[in-house]
Image (cartoon, rainbow, N blue to C red; front, side, top):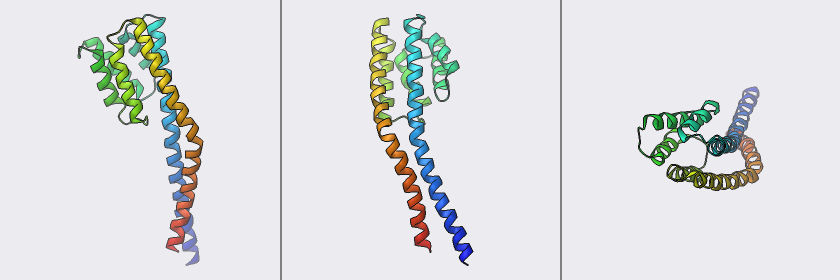
Length: 174
């Protein structure tokens, strides 16, 4: 009987630990996705500024090297711009962000800012596009700093809550 209780207790505590680790991993993934988005937007900035590529070509080139979900987003925008499926880049950009990035770990406020960026890219001249990208990249940098500041605390909290939750449930069941 005691061995069964001990085995059950170990399994419950282990489950709590895994739940805490899973929650901590989600915090890490959010930061990593934002970092990848930042890298993509810097690449887009470089393509526009230095290569003087049109946006459709830039999306295609960047999309080839990007990881998911950004690969699908960039490639789809490139296809739509090539086919002229939607007349305006802002519509293509906004639907792309909503469709391709809806399941990403990025916070909603940052996704809304990303949608707004699309309205400023297609209609502007080269300098205005670069200024818009720089402004968004600065906002993204601040969001990433906020997340990074709280990340260690949140990760530690998730792990501790997982362990403590497992112990608490074990005590309740014994």
